[in-house]
Image (cartoon, rainbow, N blue to C red; front, top):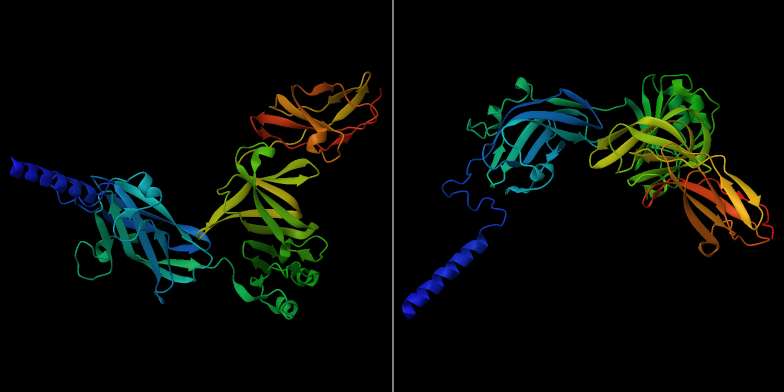
Amino acid sequence: MKGKRRIAILTALIMCIGTILVPVSGYAATAEKKGYDNVAPTINNVTFAQSVTKPDVLKVSFDLKEEDTGAVGMVMWFHNSKNMNNYFGHFGIYGNIGRPEGEWSKVPKFTGRYTIEIPVSSAVVEGKYSLKQIEVVDQAGNHRQYLESYLGDENDLQNVNINNGRNSVTVKNEFDVAFQTYITNSTILSRLKSMPTGTCAMINFDKYNHTAKKAWFDAIRGQNKTIVFSDDGIQWMINGRDIKKKTKDVDLNVKVKRELGTSYGTKDNIVSLDFASNGILPGSMTVRVKTNYVLGTGQKLYYYDDNNLKLESTKVLGYQDGDSTWSELKLTHNSKFLLSKKDLVNSPKKLKTIRKKGRKLQVKWGKIKGVKKYQVQYSTSKKFAKKKTKTKVVKGNKVTLKRLKAKKRYYVRVRAVKSSKVYGIYSKSKRTGKIKR
């Protein structure tokens, strides 16, 4: 009996140890068992464009064959034909052991035609690049790596039909750069005057030196010459043919901040862009800002001034530059702007206050389309100090405030109520006359 009992205990212990060694995800460890997926995915018929202008994305399409557990990771590396140390790629596998991360790991991919977007950042060196490496892994941990082995086996990159035999893509610069320098260089003016038509001057600035000189704009006025001012996260561009206003010094500094959108009419975050007070610019300028938030076309740009919103554009371009997300704006003037995915809610207009008998005050305002409720704040404090401020939520566009303090002046402001905890912008506050007894 004792012997049988020892055997039973030993068997149970081995089974427990075996269970511990099998990964919870089921990857790889069971692949050799009968009936389990032990075949790595394959890639074929890879196609992509012959050129790309940075920063942009290179769209790469390919045929995937994977019948069982589904592919969960993909890697493609493009290397410079002259210098293998210059490369760009799509990284979607953590290490080389089949541990997936990223978009593919959420929804495994099976046999079919797929397209991935590979960022080509502004840091990528110009030149011709070739696809030199492909890796793919499935959910069971089966991993295949394609390389230029020239051995002719199934993992030889030469056997993967790449771009119909034209395995190359040329990375181009957006600008034909005549010279690049720092903003304090005393030779900028003379170099702008002498640089060839159709070329560009790259001028770097930072938080210590960020003033573009009036004379520089005058030097390229009316000519097909471009100046690009660049800092880490900000880029200004202007072509001489677009300089049609009075020239002046321009402060290039921009404060970029992500904010909660709940005070502007949306649950989403927004991005505030607080420009220096340049007023009207010398001409139409393209400004690129690294926001790391709003992406895609259809972003909404609002001009925000004195408690009022004005929709400037619904066609703001969003793009990826490496790991960073940027937005591209077309501006003719500088002030504070708000960038949002969703529509923002403006402040009520035509705010009126009418004193009534018995320490009462009637407040009226203009309706906002689609808004049914409004929040009214009234206070004896110009800054609406919390202890001196009261709040009412009302339907419609008027309310009578009662039991006010005699011989006191009140400040009143109104905003739309979009939903719970989501509001529009406050109106500009209005000061009342003294409340009578």
